[in-house]
Amino acid sequence: MRIELANNPDVALVAVVHAMLLSVAYPYNSEQSALQLSLAHERLEPSMKNAESCRGLSAFNDLAENYGHHLPGSPADLFDWLLEQPQDMVLSLLAFGAAHSVNAVEKKFTDRKKGIEQANQLGRALKVNMPDWFETTGDSYFKHVNRTTIELSLAEARGSEAELSVRAAAKKSEAVTIADRLVAGTGWIPSPLRIALAEAEQELQAESIAEDEQFPQGAE
Image 1 (tube, rainbow, N blue to C red):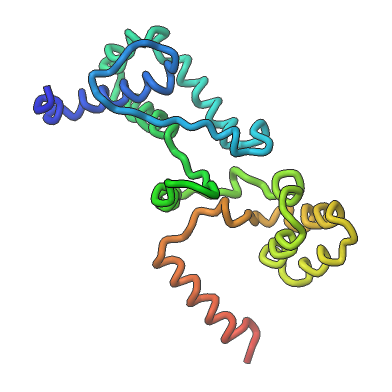
Image 2: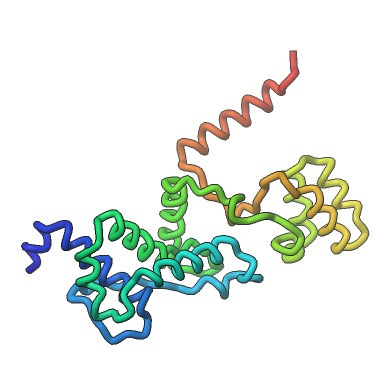
């Protein structure tokens, strides 16, 4: 069976998708795949302050609900159902199943550092634009960090004048309000949410910054 499956990519695709969907679409079933594949699906909600406001999580839940309407009600019927589907549908379900296992959460203590590095590689391949999915506001970010971080964030997002305006605020609540207003519409996001550039791109960016500092715009 191994050699026959190795020589039949169409059935192999169905078998892999079947194993994945048993885990993510039928979590409480007793069916098993002949393939000894496992798919970890860690819930992301505990890593979020306000999970209900997360655009990505909401979109993913909607996608899962949509696929749920197409999949057979009984997991025992899933394999035969997949065999009957066009390949583009099976590939879409492969992507859907694989997406469940993505984990790019950076924790203070973790044994997944290499996984986080590869998540940046995956994000670049997907051309993820994080500002499409996260907006930096007082509620989503500034309320949860100290004043020094707020000041540094404003300096990066809007420059030294913005940093000084936050520093002049008497209370943190005022600093949060000012930061919220100044960052709105800029697309700026905190560094932990950014997709890291590839090493070559980082070098080019560093060279560009160095040139700008050496020959500032408008200098003669």
